[in-house]
Length: 267
Ligand code: IPE
Ligand code: IPE
Ligand code: MG
Image 1 (tube, rainbow, N blue to C red):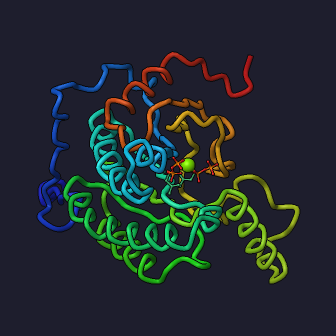
Image 2 (image 1 turned 180 degrees about the horizontal axis):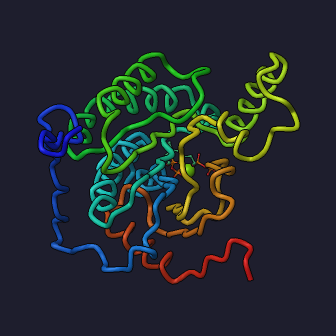
């Protein structure tokens, strides 16, 4: 195209104007760090909702409700500091082991949150994606996730991977099964399989490796979250319960990350 005829297109649909994140109520700004010390991809294990509610004599579900604001404040803080990708663990393949009442609540709640927040995410240029297994997941949840994916598909400010019915082993096993089918169909030669080829069969093939893996609630485990993508992640575990989180907790996590020396096997 001749340069004279070029008109810049807005990078998002809708109004076409990207809304900046609202500053935090406290007036705090993100820490100033060299770009190389800011993680590109942050994985969030949003844990501690039940305990937060229990401490207040409330049902566990009240903790989940209180956790919604925490996630979306963290997304705004992530945009402010320049993170490009967040993976939020919303429901694991193991969470089906909870009481039928809690599972039912979490399904309906995830569906409603995704619908409630999608316009706001779109306005800020956030691309929402679903990462997880369709099996057992409520159709209404899948429908909302897909609607949010469609609405925000072209956005480039930040990618928010909503990990709903996600399990790391499930993801790897499903990838192995899909790859086996392609081998059997003659589309892939076994000798050509390497890490790059295998990764194309994961739930979200374009997901980048996790730089910072952050878990709240004081538990020191990964609970089957993004094992393939986190092999070289830096782990930060925090004692705060998820509903008490806001963007400043993310920023403290990033400050800790910025002090780490990542070597990737090199001397
Ligand atoms: C995390 O909080 C949310 C989900 C797993 C859906 P929990 O519900 O695990 O809260 P705790 O760990 O029991 O306090
Ligand atoms: C991990 O938290 C899953 C989510 C945050 C969605 P859990 O509370 O389910 O993990 P465990 O059971 O303590 O390992
Ligand atoms: Mg928990």
